Image (cartoon, rainbow, N blue to C red; front, top):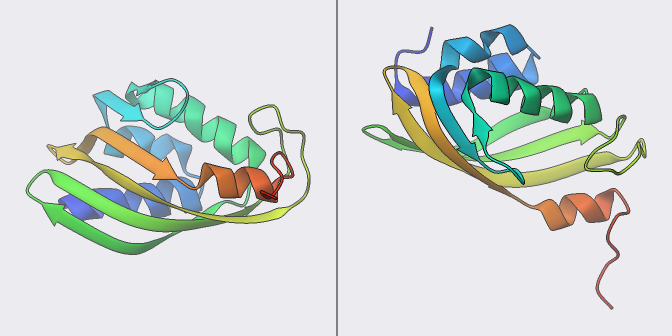
Length: 138
């Protein structure tokens, strides 16, 4: 179980995403969690599970590496890099079998050992280019 706020970030990345342990989402995501990163907000552990299924279905081997991290009381920040293979539909894009790599930053609050709110910004343009959904600028 996570003992520090950064441990929560690390556990979500490693135990949930990298190992695919969807059942552990409730251990690290508060019942009133709000995640701001997709076209619609993610609410609570059930919303997080839906997001997890969507992303892991598109990239079943997705792997996150935390490049740097910071914490100040309840606020956390992690700069990360992700890799994966596009083997399922993603945002209407059929599987391409492309190997992808993209980076991002997640910031958020941890309250009582669980993520309570978060914001994720990632290189969506770079990811869409790798999937052939956007062309390089002329």
